[in-house]
Image (cartoon, rainbow, N blue to C red; front, side):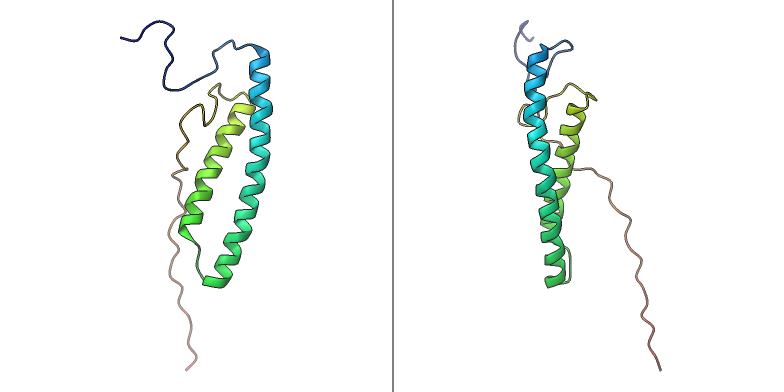
Length: 113
């Protein structure tokens, strides 16, 4: 049985946090969101160059960017007061979105005879 006042595994801002505390978290996570945005843009360019060179998408980079986008969403949800859960590193890193694109159909190449 947990003790009253004991910390849980996930640190969350309470329903009525001090305003200065929320402001500090918001400023810090706004800086993180700005850096994440540019990191995702740079990684998108890297992915494009790798696709030009190799002819296929780098799956490891694709999965990494998916996790960054999920984290970016968690940061934006916190900044926009959608939830009071302080994002990583104060709570678990969010899993990537499970929405995968449907498989592409094979296209036939017409051959001239």
